[in-house]
Image (cartoon, rainbow, N blue to C red):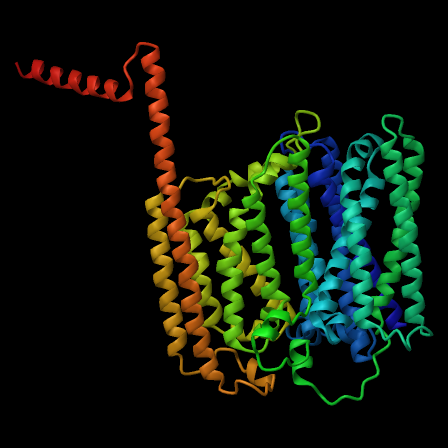
Length: 617
């Protein structure tokens, strides 16, 4: 009985969270706004968000109670003891994640009633995506081997499903006029989401199921049923695109019926997914002894590092790969749009972006990423690549400029549009604060001390989500810093080149101080993580930590020196462009028979001098 209640509460929590995300997606990007402000249709969708978010909150509360009762084997009334509940939601990982999701659901429910613009709606959408992702890290996938594959694929699966299922339900709830406007744009989102759902589902099943022995289990039957229904939904998506391709003679009555049936099927698929997530998949038969590396790091202990292993080892971090594939796909699509329009995009920028993406993949899934889990020295190499080498390539690839030139614009002349949202974000006060060179430096270098000289590092190394957070943090802080210093994309504030050079010297000094402090440390900073792995090579952990400090010093100084040279070159080019501008202006003024800027300035000084002499007489 309790297990059925767990499944039912999880189903309603998942379904209501998907509806919330779909409605937020519609409000932020699909329906028309008025210069970024909510329209009448937007106000109606805001009510849907509030109702679904409150349903998400209440069903999440019930899911916590039923899950705890199921774990303890007690009745629901027995777990209402405040002490028992407090212990579960504050001390047990599963309870912490479920409680975090519940709090976010309540936050979304309350703040959704205060939404007035599409920009803040997009922020609330991101927060909701984080909330639905949290429990994934304590799912059945987290207890299997290949953490990066199992958890990463499930993360992508859940997020993509929320866009696909939630978006379809949101479209079904819109009135016909809003549906006509929203569906063409959602069709593009749904295509990408459907592809992600299928690929991530296959990868997750391969990581979790023992296919040789699981076909006779009820779990496998439900998986097969879900796969078959997914293909039915893909057919519905195909029909959508065919209907839209028939413009302007779209049969909207038939389209509405199709969407309604599709939404109903998706609700059923969500119920199947809730059942799967509430039940343990058939375990892989294994008589192998306890493997510390596999249990803690989620992968087999590699051999002692050498050039060949570093170059060719590969353990896919699926979530990071998904993000990188999405970034590359969007970048390529932007370049293709420009090419079809007859515009040119510098090849050097594309190469820089590709090198940056490749460096991230190598430092997260490649041999470097593998050994970063097992030795602090290699972790520091990966950190330097993610935070100081890859960001330079990304920044020089000018992705923001490409986005501004290719993103969809207003559909009616009044809508802010996706491109308008990006421009608004770039000119917001938050962007001005973040792109202040002092703030960028504080985040870039200050986070080093906050991470490595507190208990954060040891705690994050113990979990897949910790590794993922560190990787994303290193990438984003590096991109922010080098965007301010050497970026070619639009910046909400113009930083003088001399200030950039001063900031670079400050970064070099702070980084050197951090590395020396790390090399001088007499205790391990990993909280016992590397010792628990029981690695058979590089047994002196303190020496390896000091080597990591030395590597951080050496690898950190080189990118900063490169950025220093690049800043100096940019300074010279800007001066050259300014000189050419003055020369062109002088020639233009001379052609008009007027004095140039210098002559005007000299005349101004002469007039001041003449007035001074007359005043003294």
